[in-house]
Length: 197
Image (tube, rainbow, N blue to C red; front, top):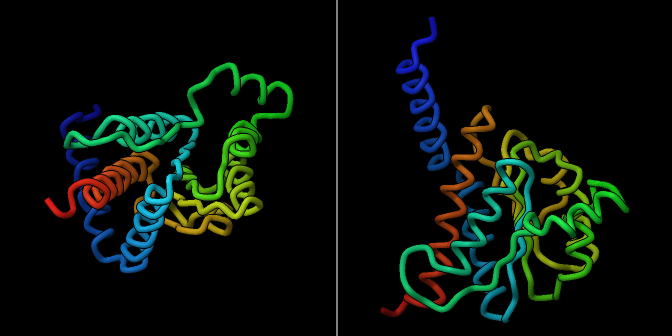
């Protein structure tokens, strides 16, 4: 019989182990620092953050966009951010007319400006619609940040900043993505509005 407490204990232990592994990953920490600085510069130049992912990562995209536009911890001016996962008419039109693999890239073709940044979220690094979106960023010479797991997949070959978190389970990878995303938002918020307070 399944022991629910044991399952919870195992999942918590897995999460703790994965989070501790981040602290020992100098490449990830350096990439996080560089990606966050890129986003700060984007906002200083009047740019906008676009975010996309599938499934749970779509929800994370919307979650993070809300933190930038509203606030994370302290009152401040809004920072422009948009999840590309929310407009059902656009998503279904592109999916129907061109194919699901283009639901994000076509939006980026319409929206991206030189000072913008695209944040891609994919646990596997293999999502074809994220690959296509990252390719558009390359074509337009717009910086891209990748939150992913495992070995980074095809997406890690295209993105400018790869944040590849440890862990083998999708749920653990998604937990770590939220830690990194919240920290990135906190860092940008502090740098833009509260550094000298």
